[in-house]
Length: 116
Length: 110
Picture 1 (cartoon, rainbow over the protein chains, first blue to last red):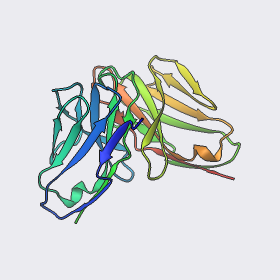
Picture 2: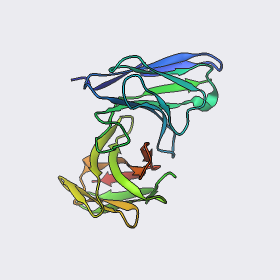
Picture 3: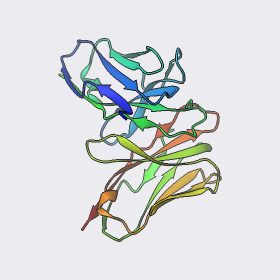
Picture 4: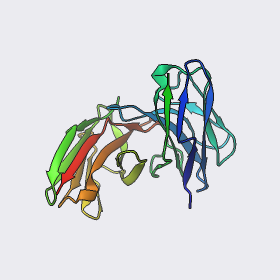
């Protein structure tokens, strides 16, 4: 059982380049999330998708876009990468929308992104 | 808006106990607890939904004081495997986003 799969695991970009981080879950979960994790700051929500066909901004959405391609897949795009976006990115999923918050979130292994 | 966790870091010897606190400036609907080992993904520990609710998971338990807007995680008779960073995530009443604290680093030494 794979759970939440993120690709790639590591990536180095130059400032101004674009890229898409991929996330897929095989647990038939309704809700999916993208977080970034920086030292000493915990997990900060970038965007989330409560259900297929919907997306909404989190705490730190600037510089990012998302696509909920289908129920399984939720991608995060950096249109013009900046050094401030160097971080570890985690995708997560949960059975219920976050508003009800009574279901655990299952995290992928993360993507370590460096922007030079 | 980010919940405040304390302490920031704690070092224990095997068998010792620890308490990690999580406080919010807003009223809370629920509190989540997760543990993350270095270089790995956060792993779910437990969710507390009601004021005063306590849950347990092996020798790890938690309480939720809704009136005080805080939760505490209790680790008893700590084991080496308990080492990692512990995060609380809070859901303010009426809010639709889970907000995580900065984390508490726990290191258990033999």
